[in-house]
Image (cartoon, rainbow, N blue to C red):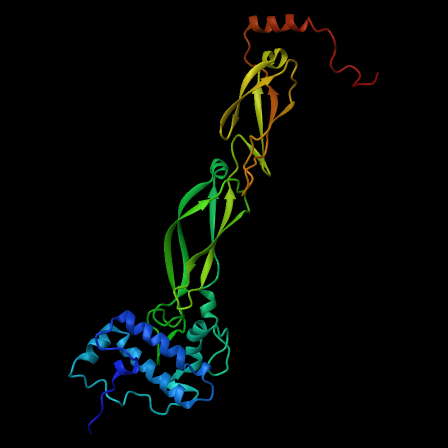
Length: 333
């Protein structure tokens, strides 16, 4: 019995010389126009929608298209397995509920599907924020840094557009999950002043791979490692600086470490151990601002060890010059 060959190019309203991209665009346009969710109660629209998908299943695949374009193509007869089409199924075992996920993305239909069921949520999974952990040194947090990072995430399957199926079959590209893994390397800029617990949001930096054009954000969860010299409290820094007894007693100009290099400060005469000085604007930058915190410098008088007999004798003679008892009055007689 003779069979008629369907004109899939005519169904998609494109010429035979159309590129794959042109075929894809035509399919999307027609699928949007005749989707049953936008034409409720129209058997004609459902039938048209079925024809469009049948045509795109062939022409959208370069290998199938090449076989279709071959004049000796007995495979593509009119009896293509779409008999018995109803409002619940588009083709043999092709459940409208499986296809609803894909087109809810097209038309902002949310969880609605063609058969009135609830969506699988696969599409939404591809739109979640991508959270990446990043550990910085205090110096990097002070200066700000641009780091290459591998961003791992799930995107909507490019073959089935999140439905998990390609017409009547399970999508082989994603094994029916509707998503596929993707790793991208991108340079991420971290502004100065971040701290442990800071969240740096890069808005719209990742797409979901689907038709909707929706994007997700990258959220960098920052941890700043403790520093071996400085202690951070908010935007202020604290440091303990050792000084000698002569420097503390007589005063001196000393070099104090800071994250922008070093600073010179004047130590006044008679500085005692534990005395704290504030260097204004030598702390951490304020995130998103031009101000900086302060650097608090605590003096710690160091006591020499391993003294020679001559050094010990000199210190004893120095002690005789100060007969007062610094602990007088602390103990009641």
